[in-house]
Image (tube, rainbow, N blue to C red; front, side, top):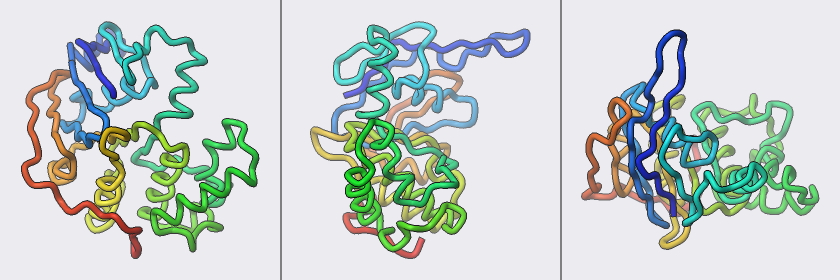
Length: 239
């Protein structure tokens, strides 16, 4: 599904060169839920950005479904991000002037889908995450957990092959975080959709199938999660 081969990422910061990644190799199979864990500055967000075609490596190669990203044109990379990868971020990134259903529909609207047609899967997406009754509300009328569920519905509206989550619970309280993690755990599809979650939280990481530990831009260790936590299959309420 996704693979990084001996990837490095260096960038200047003032008079020094920051080595965010120093030769990372990682393969993520279709249907896997991978947690990438490490302290601040370990390179975990940088790695996710490279695998999601949001940035390019200084050296090494990144592949998505067997295709090398460095061989794709800017137009192809844009289409990849828009049509095949869903992104979920710590601070939600919802547009404040759009209602929840409009925020969910936004990726389809940007792809040229007619508004009336785009709203159909957008409403269905909100139903899936338990927020159909909040469809007409604006972000400032919702809780943090509700906004993150809207962001997840937005990531799923394109039916992506991969969902990449950068600290998706970092701005939430512990109860809300638990519910969001259960929702994320329900998203992978065997042989199809993969989920990659970057986190510094050891508890959150255990919701994945496999935990990749990064430190100082290198893979320090990998481990399989022996006992998977409860994977929710129904919509969640009360966030």
